[in-house]
Image (cartoon, rainbow, N blue to C red; front, side):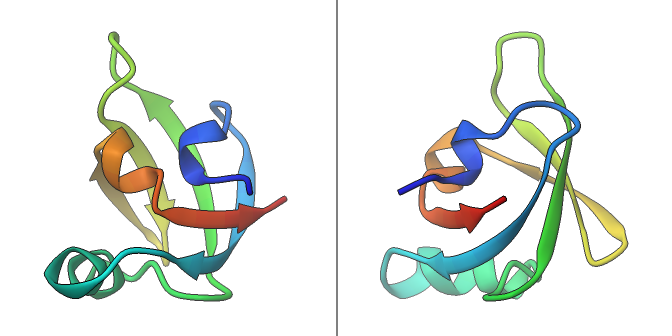
Length: 74
């Protein structure tokens, strides 16, 4: 299973599934990360956490722990 955490800078991918349960899963989905949406990894912080993603026309910062719950396909 490939996740957002595995993406390289500049790479685009499509979300297959958001894993997890409860409030954490809901929070990720409320940010616009849902099945079928395209995401673009714009850049990483100097130490690699957080990641800056482009989703649905806006910029989003996401921790790697949360990114690991988002399954993707390139």
